[in-house]
Image 1 (cartoon, helix red, strand yellow):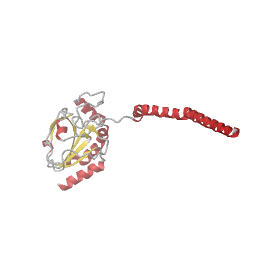
Image 2 (image 1 turned 135 degrees about the vertical axis):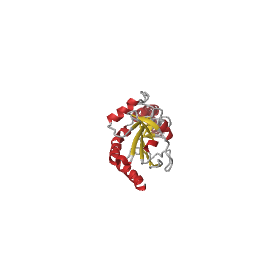
Image 3 (image 1 turned 90 degrees about the horizontal axis):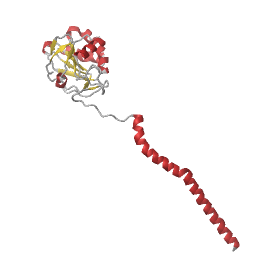
Image 4 (image 1 turned 90 degrees about the vertical axis):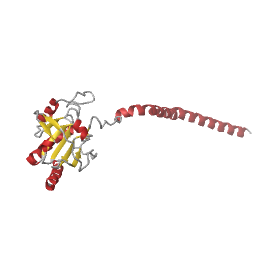
Length: 230
C-alpha cells in the first residue's frame, strides 16, 4: 500500500510539474506571440501604405488631360476617316493659323502641354519630321491644357502665351505652336492625355492617331503611307 501511495504521489508530482512547465511556456512564448500578432494587426494597415505608397486616384480625363507615360494604346476620340474639326488660332508670332489655311497637304497636329515631360521629349522628334518633310507636310502643335509650364498640385496658374513661348525657346521648336487658352480645340479632338498626335490626309480626314510618345520611324511610316496614297 505504501508503495502504491508513493507511486500516486510521484505521478501527481509529475502532473503538477508538467502543468507548471506548460504555464511557464505560455508565459514565455505563447502569450508574447499572441500580443505581437495583435500589435502587427493594428500597425500594418496604418504603417505599410506609408512605406509602399498609397494608391492615388486617377486624374480626370475631362477638363484636364493627363500626361501619358509614353507608349499608351488608349484609343483617341476621332476614328480614322472622320473629318477633322476646324480651328483658327494664333501662333507665338501673333499670326493666325487655321486648318483651312493648311489645305492641300497632309497635316500633323501634335496636342501638347508645356509642363508635360513626354511632350518636351517629343519636340526634337517633331523638329526632325518638320525638317525632313519640308513643304510636303504641315506640322503644327496646339496647346491643350488650361495650366502653365509650372503646373503641379500646388501650382495651377492659368496658361499664358509666355508659357508657349518658353516651350518654343527652351526646346528650339521649329514648327508653329498654336495657343488655345480655352482648350476648345483639344475638346473638339477629344484629347485625353499628352502627347496626342493626329495625322490628317490632304483632305483633312483622320488617318491615324498616336496617343503617347512615338519614334521618328513611326511618324515616317504614317506620313509615307499618306503621301504614297495621294
